[in-house]
Image (tube, rainbow, N blue to C red; front, top):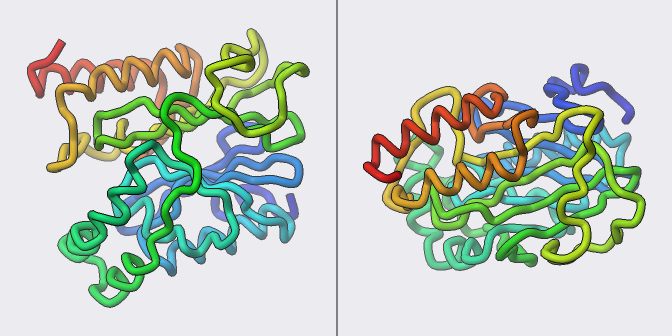
Length: 266
């Protein structure tokens, strides 16, 4: 890395993992740095914000490329900057691609309702990037240099297409380095010691305000999605909300219980 996380204005979460909190909507974007590969998690609320993230990532990578992009869910403040990451392999939960095609007008309108410039929102909607890789269960990415990431379709909840990203703190030497469905070997390779794992939650978890349940939320399934999130990361993980400060498992569990009471589900 040519600059430190702090010098780039990012928060370091663990070895080779950082995030920034973008202005206006306080949306989180994450970066996981491997050896010759890097994963951006969410792309910001517009093309200018996506370009800013790309520029900052290149500084952190010493001019290297963002090779992978994971979109946690189909809301404008997380996907409208994706066109800035030309050439990246884009991942999302199964069904997200349909929302980005059939629902682009509603995404544009939602951005404008929330204060986005109408022209910029229209341009971003026109250039929406659909994921090439659709995650139905779990998908393992090996970014090289001992950095492994698990993409998990843990929803529905906040939306019908919620993707979580687990950054493992260690990797078994016998795990294959190709991208594949992770229902086979490689699942459960978490270490017993070392730095805690880091889970990017998207808007399944929010710290800076009450979780938002819009018309595309699935309230009856949201608590179960958080149960899956907790099973994925465990008690010692760092959980990174879509909005707000990083939290622990206790916070996620309390938010799960609050949502269950709010929506009247177990």
